[in-house]
Amino acid sequence: MKTKLIVALDYNNLNDAKSMIDILSDSVEYYKVGLELFLSSGFASIDYLKSKDKKVFLDLKFHDIPNTVAGAIAVSIRAGVDIFNLHTQGGVEMMCEAKRVLDDEYSKLSSSLQTKPLLIGVTLLTSLNKKYLQDFSISISDEAKYVSDLAYKAKLSGLDGVVSSASEVRTIKERCGTDFITITPGIRMLDDNVDDQKRVVTPADAKSIGSDYIVVGRPVTSANDPLNAATNILEELKD
Image (cartoon, rainbow, N blue to C red; front, side, top):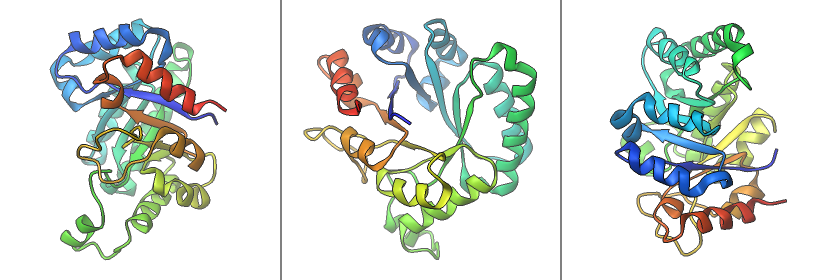
């Protein structure tokens, strides 16, 4: 699978998000709608993206009792979301119920959906590292092993893939199969400020290591020329 770019719309209002979508125009197909934009604009952000024939990664990281997460999944599918995620630490029962609802909703709506939405698990946030495991008395001290175990539980629960640092992609692919999708945040260009990310890689690094999707925010959206920044990243991802 060719590595694809997802641009993160980390805005607190819809107008700024719309402006960036329009600036990037046909160059970018996938966009991430996270908590900040979704809470400020609701489904209007998703509606706008779909009106532009864009793919939507709804990054709300569902984590609740199985029935509540299942309801959120159903609403997301009906809204036209293409990728959505949940915390693998919500448990196997929660993940299995989310998968069941996804299958049921897709069977009802398949005629109006271009492709089946992807259900993705969140493993260890890229802002966290070994110190987090120690602070919360998690018995596994190696973050790569911890992420691998969570990814494997996601695979067994029927999820399509996980969000993970690029440093864990190879291990995940070896354990869960090459068709198990990996979405990699924390992407920076070589001269970028890493901000609050502790585990970061370049687009070329992520491609070479086998990431299926990379999520890029500030290196594109805060650039003096966002279109040029996105174009440069896409050039790095070319075969």
